[in-house]
Image 1: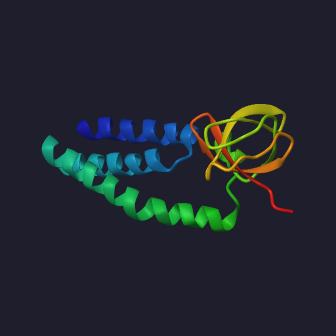
Image 2: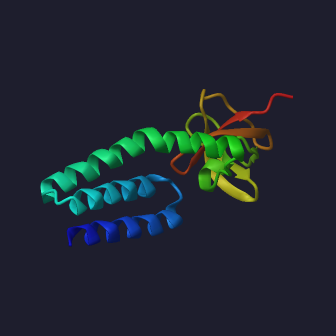
Image 3: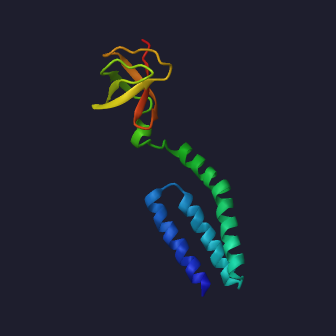
Length: 143
């Protein structure tokens, strides 16, 4: 009867994967399926857990990287949230230096700083090189 619990856990993890799309929960679901198989063969609970953990870890470190590489070669993954801002052009709203300033990125004003500490004058076009917390790290665009 323990195999039903493992099967239920595998199903819940597989469904939750549809919401996260990170392929982590799918690998854990595979581990739970392995635990269900071990339970089906009459293994003790300790052996079931060990089998589930070992299979999940193997899947995480072998199958998941391969699947991610395959997905990236088939289609470009779209960056979201702050990762989508890296590489975008912005305009310095105030003077920006290593200790701070403000830039406008796509209509939003962000706190900003330069990586090198060099001064960027207000009105200068800049490129976002990194997002550090809620601060955009920028560099002037060389024309």
